[in-house]
Image 1 (cartoon, rainbow, N blue to C red):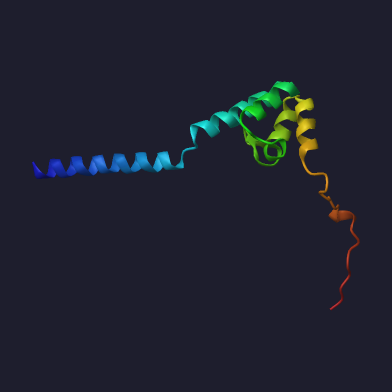
Image 2 (cartoon, rainbow, N blue to C red):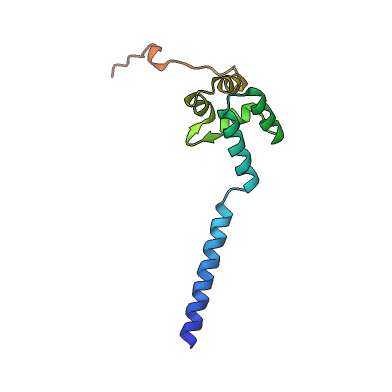
Length: 114
């Protein structure tokens, strides 16, 4: 009798601990729905629908362009991959234009002799 109570208590404790660990790592449902809606509105290639969705969740285009991933791709590549070029262009324009890209292969090499 004692061993069955101990086994039941251990099983209950294990189930509760696993449930708590899964719930603490899960994404908030509101954030998950917001990200799904943003990704879906990106695919429509309708800029006004995209703006409306972004505005409804109080997000910025730059934040979305820099941080949101849809199906493993960044959102701009995701939009281009699915032919949503207008939305991709809007997101690309939202990124700060002060970024400098340097072609490392074109930079003159430094020669050292030792």
